[in-house]
Length: 154
Image (tube, rainbow, N blue to C red; front, side, top):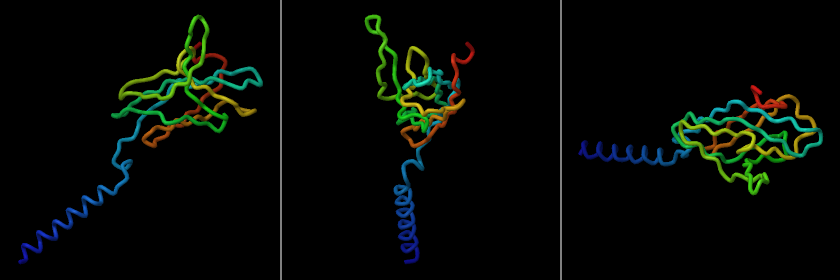
């Protein structure tokens, strides 16, 4: 009788443990994106410009694919990923709907390619602008972008 009571009690404990694990938010068990930024900069535009462009390299140092959910900054009305495409000798900007970075890979946002389109800048931006990258797993990467005339090292 004692052994039967003990087995029943252990079954209840196991069931409670399984329910506890199942009730945990999936983000508590998920691995978070580990993306690092380097070489960030924003090209200075003439006064009154309604759009600027931002560049950097994003490197995924994690073990899972990093999927960008959104990009945001208080210094701009909106921030979007765009790609420069040349069709019949004419350069055009096309929105990039998603960005995925495989583990161990890097993506360069650079002039003439994928870049940040920074629309409706605040009247006074200062020397650096903070831009936040929000990843699908809920992690966030805030990057300070210096404003400069040319790419770093030029």
